[in-house]
Amino acid sequence: MTHRCHIDVGLADTQGVERMKTRKLIVMVTMLAAMAAGPALAQSADGPALRAGAAKVDITPAPNELPKTYEGVHDPIYARAIVVQNGTTGAALITVDVGGISNESWQSLSQRIEKELGIPALNVLITATHTHSSPRRPGGGDLDEKIFQAAKLAKESARPATIGYGTGVSYININRNIIDPKTRGWWEGPNYDGPSDKTVSVVTFKGTDGQPIAVYYNYAMHAVIMGQLDQVSGDVPGAASRYIEDSFDDKIVALWSTGAAGDQNPIYFQQTYDLREIRIKDYAKRGEDISNAMPPGGQGLNKQDPTVKRLMNQQKQMSASMGQFLGEEVLRVMRGIERESPTAGIFAAQKTVTCPGRERTNKGRGGIAGTYIDGPDVSMHLSLLILDDIAIGAVNGEVFNLIAQRFKRESPMARSMMVTVTNGRSTTGYIPNDAAFGYQVFEVLSSRLKPGCAETAIVDGLLDLIDQAKPQ
Image: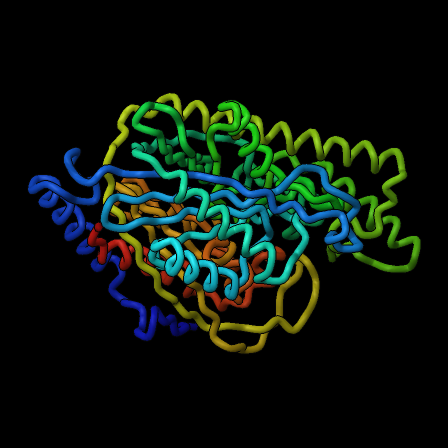
């Protein structure tokens, strides 16, 4: 069966392979010609000087603001921002320690940043770390104000700067969809052979005096270690950023950006699986079967039980350890970056792609076939920001890892990364790659997307935006 797949208002091109070859050739020739002529995506050294500033604002809820299900604060959470300017235009990179950014908050914040800070709304990326330990709060109000203040303070602190780029690897993530060795059905667990990009992409901003201003790093992993503790936490992204910042005596701001983590968990996640088994048995004693479900947070756990206490303490240790491991790799990459440009072109563009939707008619977290009826079309918002010769492609949903790998492989720009849960929240649910629609796992079962559209719509959509690149 074939499905329609809309990009903006037009149908997706069916001659994808030839189109991709042409696209790459055109963009490569254009870039080579521009480099020979002078200013391009990487501008000449005598162009307008780059300026960069960074700031972070504490967004930790006060005790009286915590939902009844939360038992306190394990570690503070923040809104962090980097603002860059090149004499012609500017851009803002913002990361917030929350589960997601609503469409209303993204739009109002982007427009306010444009109106009050002079940074075009198209040039703003607002990313959630997707921590599962941040209370859901309605859009607007105090949280949005604090996010804006982070951007405002970042702009006010801007000074002449350089931009650099490097990549490393970290092995703390893993594909989380397996064939259970006992049931021989699909379930959740560490799939050591499954697709999993270990790349850590790192963008640095330094003052012309050589002192670091900020670092923007990208990694694909769900922030779910601390989710069952029912305490506020930035999880691994927060731990990594705090570790990096502490390494520079808090004279730097470190922004995590969420990679394509739709099917990626922390590699060491056993405590969560053990706690789930305890919950399943406890619920069964009360006559309720949750073996194919997942109650939110730590609901139903006896946190006074010695075994539960031990497992939860191990989760706290694991979050701190993984944050340190990832932070150390970011620091290693930073030390190795040699090419740092004092100028940078800035380009941004956005578009919406639409795919056929479906609605699920049965229940079950995994290991069963899903049944569906046709549903309304669903859309995904794509954003592109190019700084110097670094392409940041963003999607407003939870994307499977192979889609990002395909985007990086097909991108004509060698320095490309994919950032997800950025600039609002899609109505798709998870966004599996085409092949993953055969998996009977919760991400695929719950997805509102029909198979055969989203992967190409996202990749081609971002590549089309790169084709339009006209740096300012």
